[in-house]
Length: 191
Length: 85
Picture (cartoon, rainbow over the protein chains, first blue to last red):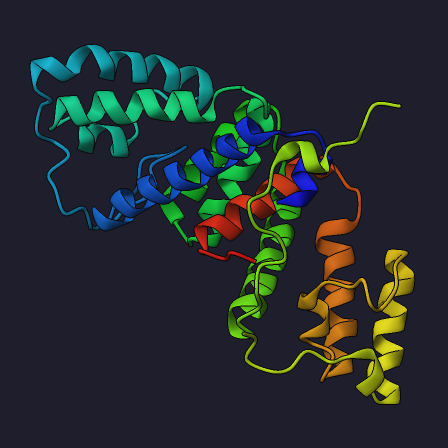
């Protein structure tokens, strides 16, 4: 964490990283828990695995948000359907509204730009081994012109290294080197 | 409290010292200033070398992603793994 403080982020920036991590972990929990097959960029083929029926029409209260998601999916994912994650949540319209609003907030530009946040999100999805969200986020990055095969491999390589070193620190029960960090302690002082 | 004692400079054998000296030199630092995550591997010097190469190729080498993005990825993945190091 000290490294990102040295590179110019402050407590707000760290909180943005934390938000991407916790949001992606949470949507992975729901998406994989519902056993959703990846449907971005293309709808799945083969036998259904989903725990809920995605063919049930959404309640009227969900239609406005689903319309917004459909528009966003066309622009951000290059697809003509609403991804199954959002269709599944639409059975509970207030939950759909809350998670969609949070999704846009967390992945939108802040102190960390949207392109960096997409890379962070994909790295977390790879680390958590989510077929659904790795497909979704990789496609979003490709549509944004941020990812190509080379960048996706760079993210995979970096994720490999983070998983390796996290395991070493867990396995060896290493004590955290810093506590109660403040950004001011680590950012370069003006000359 | 670490699972194993971290190798201290005064207790290192020749192989352990050589591996950590190579690592410190490439990082522009000293053995004393190396992170505990490296000292924890020093009981097996070949692993230090392997992980240094991994680190250089997978993380430290400048490629397409800015270093801030890579460090942010590292923080996020570590958070998602509940790693407080």
